[in-house]
Length: 167
Ligand SMILES: [Zn+2]
Image (tube, rainbow, N blue to C red):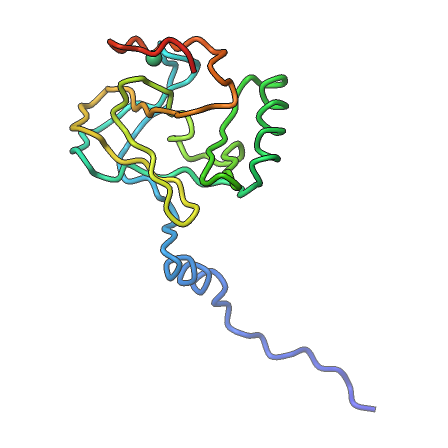
């Protein structure tokens, strides 16, 4: 009877080949392009603030997360609101959303403003933020959320001239 022999140890390319695969798909390990910090905001809870100047139209970063159906996203949003009061959910199409609850990407803390300095762009299911204008060091990075699951029941405290008043 032949004896079983351990297979020769294959070289361990796992990490490198994974990185190459990710690069091939265009998913950089860290999609954050500019230094930012998360700290308390006068708008709501935690906000994200520029630690360096950002020129208009530059990509600031992305938020990654779990792709879920819109129905699941609404369910999770309602549950999260009851437990932590924090929801990190972005609709990427009518049918799909990204749940960024379990990522560390700082832009998930971007607050809403009726006069935002960022715009959210969804491309192939990826959620990226670009500067709408030149942004100075220390400015809070904000985005117009668009329709939310709050359906206008939440007061907006963005403080922008022409604030719509609700989210
Ligand atoms: Zn507002």
